[in-house]
Amino acid sequence: MPAPIPASSMEARFESILGEAGAGPHAPAPPDCFHDLGLDQIVQAVAAPWQEHDLAGFFHASLRSEDAIVFRQEVMRDLEQPEVMAAVRGFTERLRHMRQQLPLATQRHNVHECNRWHLEAVRRYGEAVATLHRELAPLALCSRGLRRWRGYVAGYAGSAPFTRLMAQAAQLERDLAAITYTVTIAGSRVSVRRYAGEPDYTAEIERTFAKFRRGTVKDYLARLPVTVGLNHIEAQVLDGVAHLNPEVFGALSAFRAEHPVFIDPQVERFDREIHFYIGWLDFIAPFRRAGLAFCYPDVSNATKDIEVRAAFDLALARRLLAQGEAVVCNGFELHGTERMIVVTGPNQGGKTTFARMFGQLHWLAGLGCPVPAGRARLFLFDRLFSHFEREEDIRNLRGKLHDDLVRMQHILARATPDSIVVINEIFSSTTLQDALFLGHEMLERLSRLDALAVCVTFLDELASFSPQVVSMVAAIDPAAPAARSFKLERRAADGLAHALAIAEKYHVTGAWLKERIPP
Image (cartoon, rainbow, N blue to C red):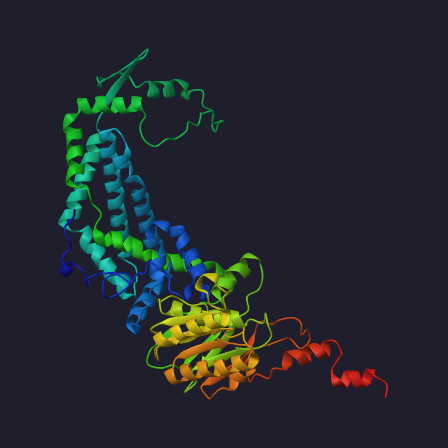
């Protein structure tokens, strides 16, 4: 295995493309909030094309440092330059092809064939490293991560272990290419001998028929199926060639024994981790082509003033774009002592979508990703909790209200002032009076905690709970009150707007009734 490259040979010591302090956080299991917020659908779609890299775990672990988020944002911005992305993507594709060949070095039955596949994998690996080094060198990189990676690649490509590895591989390929031999077929007998100047019948046939060539002609060549590996006859021919050239094939065998593992650990880790960025940028590209905005949010844990414009639920938008439907964007803001957004309004008006969007934005911002919004300033949280309505689970022997209370108590017991809580339609299974009492108690606990929260509710009274609460209402189109605009407005909840609009549509308001009923 190539020896590690000294730190002095690089611009700065490279550890991970995901962050300053070694490999980025990776959590195999998704957080509890992922399903409620639709983040499981998003991550599954991002990771699907790159199954071999197990990317989902990188999206399960949010960051807690502003600088760590900026580090990733810098890399994302660099990769949005076409020439940078082309160099990095080309590197990963070459390594992908190399990895596809590596199993052939162990799965074939003929030892000489295995050794040759191993040599080819080394050649492809060296080509990938050398090409990346050449293509990155002239590029204007701004991110700490990619500048340090470029320095590491430069040091590694010029190191004695790597140059020796590639020199050995190149010499072996030259030696193998220089081998000539003759195969004689007589009935069922195939013999392999040293080449003794026998005529090349392929060249003779081409010369004989060259006089009949008249410009472009129809191709009558038969397309034989291409198979990987040697059949038993080809393997025996190869054994015969190896017997005639023991020095070259002995060197090939020794090369494999000397370099059974030739991939540098840092190269291997970079190849996996860089797909966190490639996967995300590939995923959001169709949304951008459809005219939807993504931005790099300002993220801070020093202030809870947050502001977002032209944002959307990414999981919903993915389905809508696939169906050719429009995506509605919304925004929100909290300033000063404001901490909670209480969302009310008619059913199917976009309230739950808004809650999911709020959670998605904060989680994605905490990963260092561009978020689905035109502009965003967000809070850097420690944990994100969600409480969405669920069907009763007969296995836990709890009723729906009991389950709501148990889940909410579990959230409040673990939440801190730096947490975010997203609540959707809680306490809908009890009476109005009990729901109001429990809703007030819940908001009181969240208020004392000073955590950021969104609460979607059918209880308009909660929207005026305290000065810490901002009321947002799912708007309707007065001209078509039965339709939904899916826009949310920052205004007081009145509980009557939708009912009055419906009454006006069907001419059953007091004014209409007086006009229609004779005195």
